[in-house]
Length: 285
Image 1 (spheres, rainbow, N blue to C red):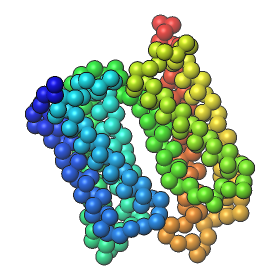
Image 2 (image 1 turned 180 degrees about the horizontal axis):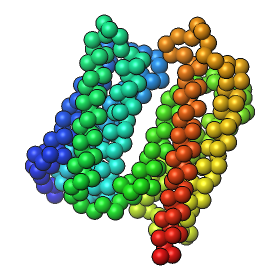
Image 3 (image 1 turned 135 degrees about the horizontal axis):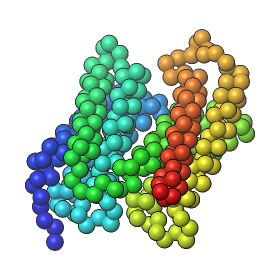
Image 4 (image 1 turned 135 degrees about the vertical axis):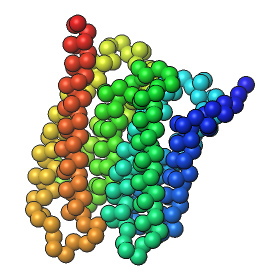
């Protein structure tokens, strides 16, 4: 039997979620009417707003109907992690969309940009409320430092995929290796998040935490190679930005992939160091 919990809609977090759902719906609706673009950055912006709208509405509905109490994973951990992810995604979109898709006469695009910044502020407020005033268990994986780093690793990988163009790496084995690194690390990180969120790690015959440490070390090493190979081969023939390059210059995307590769290498390295300290140093004490 499904009960109804009105507090899910009237408490501050619930009100902020309803506002976020309304505003993200406004963002992708206004942006869609402002004009279509074939750019992968436009698709990413639309995906972000739709993604945040869908999961925010889902969270509100599940909490209102109290179905959230029956899910087979840590619900408060999931909602806190989603708020942090949505906050980060809205921040990036609020920078990308006005940079590439607004102009002085683009009133709808400007409106979508402003509303997107408001969405970021609302999700940031939800993060503050859930972190300062936890309502349930706070020991969930996604709310811990390793969990946050895993989400950050997958998010940066998504930005890399959005910036990649097929013609940039086809025919070059070095760049293809870099794309393989991005893809493999992304897939494994997603699997780790899902296994931990579903509380399936206890079924592994070996220590799951130590397996994650081994993976983090391998991922950091793989990203080290990509950090060297990608700029070496991608800028081999175009060391400077072409003078006639347009608004969506492929050279700019190469720069974005380069910096995102460096950032993800740093995150994987920090994740490795923290995981080793957490597993071995804390256990020894």
